[in-house]
Figure 1 (tube, helix red, strand yellow):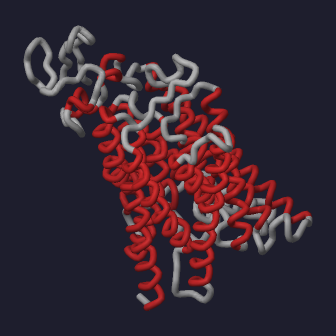
Figure 2 (cartoon, rainbow, N blue to C red; figure 1 turned 45 degrees about the horizontal axis):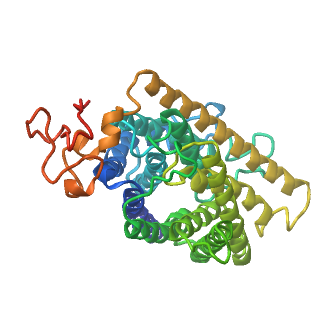
Figure 3 (tube, one colour; figure 1 turned 30 degrees about the horizontal axis):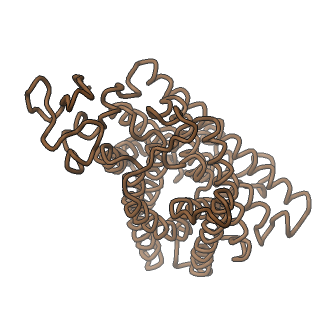
Length: 457
């Protein structure tokens, strides 16, 4: 193995470590955005996105995404899905670093979904959909766009037309965002969410959301910069640096735009400067720049972020008006901003963007990326509806009303994140009981408010 190869693998591994740490960012962001009685539930889901996701991606996910890429012959049968290296069989050990880096991307796509259906989804339903996303739904899209055999990677009619998505605005974030949308629609809103004109079920700790946001901001630098996948070749370092600069600037544009729009919407002179909106706007900007962070000028990165902030706020408004309950605005941040990013790269690319070349080939590239965005949306929409509606028909998608009211932490996990008295909704100072028995899974009738028995599954 050459020194260059060692350097490239080390580069992938180190960036993979940082992207893996984004799971902690999602965990804090989601935990702070839910009510205290559901904290343990959301944290274990983020934990299992890592470990269950690793198992499934090892067994089949990587195979569907990149299996057979060692074969230099481009075959039509490989255009849709990979078919080799199951459980890493016959995979060259030099490709293990690539497996690790691609796995943490897959875990990110699955994690996006959990926030949209937080506080009311069954744990078993989570295990099922997470395995299917990490093992099949996401890897197939990865194969289309990033495998050398994928049909989106290179147009079958013109090898100069290729789908441009450097770090996954479409491949990762649109997939996760669309699946989040279908999940939120299928599971329905939380109890009380839209019963009043302005019923917002706020999370329980803003500092935890802020910590999660900063971890994600940090992680996005490796998410985008590491997507160069090598550091030893001429021009690699400059490309990585450009990607990092654009990630920061696009995040800045998104955060500022979202914050200002929120201020204006709540009354410019009397409204609020919202921290939560600013964080989500920053994330939206970083999502949007994923596709083109390696190929746009820094000023364009900032502009892409500004538009991403507007796109995020628009999607967030529409989702709420449609009475779709998305506690973390996952659809707006990931699908809305991701779609814009897939289009923006073909407009602003300094190599061959529409705003630079303005020729037939530039518009063909725009059209090919648009086709890719539509195909990715359709794929994720189909499988999202198939998965979540099937779970709903089997009556294993949503918890019972009693458990939802009391929270999922104790009935489902037996591990409250906080003292019972902080939970509200009838929890007392002591552990809950069923028929006077302290078993850690039932409910106590406190003052006649709730006299129910909880059955766990």
